Image (cartoon, one colour):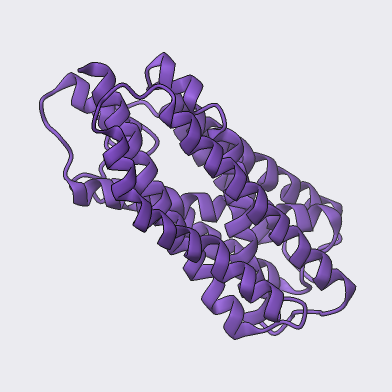
Length: 303
C-alpha cells in the first residue's frame, strides 16, 4: 500500500515503484508533520495543566488551545479524506473503504476521544476530578501518538539509519513540548489571562531549557547522520544545506528565546506573536532539510 503522508512512506513507495514524489509533495508532507507535532504539543501542556489544576479558568481558557491543537493535528487527516494529490495517506493509512488503519493511525484517532471529553467537561476552574482525568488521558494519548508515529518512521529505514536516528523519538517529544509551549503561551496572552510573577519566570526558564535541549538533540541527529554516509557527494550536499539550516536555527531558537527573555515574564503579546509562528517556520525548514538528508542517505545505501 503506497503512502505519501510522511517521508518514510514516500521512501517505501519509491523502493516499490519507480515513481518519485515531487518536491512540492514532500514540502507539504513535512508541513503537515510539523503542524501535527505542534498540535500534540499543545495538547500535552493542556492535559498536564488540567491534571495539576493549573489551567486557565473558564471554558474559553481551555477550549481555545484545545481547538488550536485540533486544527493543527487534524489538518493531515482532513486533507487525506479530501484525497488531495500527494497527501492521500495519514499515518500510513488511506482513509478509504477497505483499508485498515495502521497502529499509529488508530492511536491518533483515539486521541480525539479525550479531546472531546475535555471539550465537554471544561467549566469553571476545571477542578472536577473527571476533568482532570480527561486531561491526563489527553496528555498520555498525545505522547503515545508522537512516539508511535516516530517509531513507524524509523521502522521503514535501513538498519544503519535506524541506529543513526536513535535520538529521533526524544527529539520529537522535545520539539512538541517546546513549540507547543510557545503556542500555548501565545494563546494565554491573546485571551488576556496571563499572570506574571514567579510562575511566569519558571515558565520562561522551562521553555528556554527545552530550546537548549532541542538544539543539542538536533545537533546529535545531524552528527549521527554523517557517520554512515558513503556517497562522495554527501559533504557537498551538507554544505549546501548549511545556509538554510542557519535560517532555521535563527527562527527556531534565536527569535523565540529573545522574545522570551524580553517579554516572557511580563506577558508581551507582540513577542509571543513573533516567536510562535517563527519557531513553526524554522522547524518546517529544519524538518524538510533533515528528511532530504535522510532520503539522500537511503539512496546512497541503495546504490
